[in-house]
Amino acid sequence: MVEKEELLDEITTMGNSGFISIKNNIYLLYDKNTKKFVILGIKNWETYRKIRSAIDQDVREVLDKLSLSRPEFLIIDNDGKLLGLEGEMKKNVLTLLNKLTPIAGKINKITINGNKVVLNNIALELESWDADIPLDEIKKVLESNIPVGIEIYKDFWSIKVHHSYLSKVASVLNIENVNIIDPKKISPLFEKTRNYYVFSTPNDYDVYYDIVSFKNMRKYLQSLGVNVIQQNISDSFEIDDNDYRYTVIKGEGDEVHIKVYKENEFTTSLKTYLWYFGAIDFNTLKNLDKEKIVSIVGRQIKERYFYPMPTSQVKQHIMTLIDNTIKAINDAINSVKNRIPNFTKPIKSIVVISCIFSEDCKVTLELDEIGRLSSYYSLIGTSEGHLPIPIFLEYAGIETESSCDDEGDISNTKNIIYFIRE
Image (cartoon, rainbow, N blue to C red):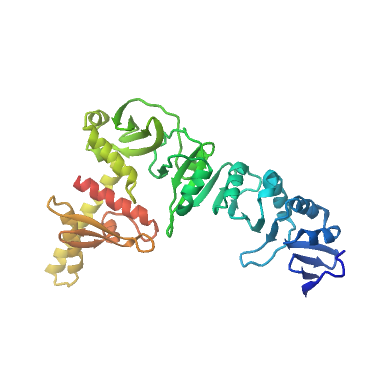
């Protein structure tokens, strides 16, 4: 029982239950029918000890584990309203606490909101409460007090880090020479040689990275649609360039896979295509200037808003671009013949598109990156004027309004222009 000197600073009744706050140290819901308390949150564990006998046995099992390290413990909803430790949540919390037992002494505060559990500055997103959790990594980050997110899925996990904390987290995890890898560009002939890999992530408003252990790397990439495969190399050659070594591997059709090493340590890979090098087949690629190959590979790995496109796909877009441009020309001619005053707008587009096909035309991309990348407000600039990227892609037969993929729109635009002009 609660001793008489304990002060109840808030009592609210509703139906058969009542909300009770004791000295703002413990929050309870009292069920008048069962005469039992449901725990909503604990800030002071001495108060919990005094009312422990009035709490269900299975809830005590959960809370007794917490009482050893005495963290602040709250269960809330999206609006910050306190919720009870009952039902499925009891089972889930007990499962999690059993796993956290070895590092319980490092945890000062636990806040649970649905499948999101915040441990001090670490936000766990739990797709599965039964999944393995990275105890060693959680312990190291807890000790450093760095805010991170950890996404825990059924069979893998990844650590999400804001760019401003990447170097600190890398140091805590003993990651040397951090290499940022774009998962949209890597070859499926990926090589596992490190304890952790750092991947860039798509984000509209800020820059985050995923840190993935080598054990989880295959599952992580599969979740992004990249299947890492066993190497089956039919033909390849190597290029040495100062401290770097490039292994260029023949893929299926016009695919080219490139593995990049620095001082004999694998750093990243790239899946690209023959047409970027002006090669008609892999034997032609072997005989090209090696500096040119290295330059193109380096640009493709580093270039923002660019993802290599198969030859057949880019050719189809260009054929559609040409067909629609010719149709627009014919429509404009008919409008002039029939004195219909709506031909000026398509003529502007036709002039810019025609300029892109001219060797003497200067072509630039003017991207709108204020706040976040917007392909809708980005432009193709030419010697003959400007054309909004959505209009250009519409001529190429690429839908933009429903895709909501600004980076993809820019990449498609770049690939079409590169094929036309290089």
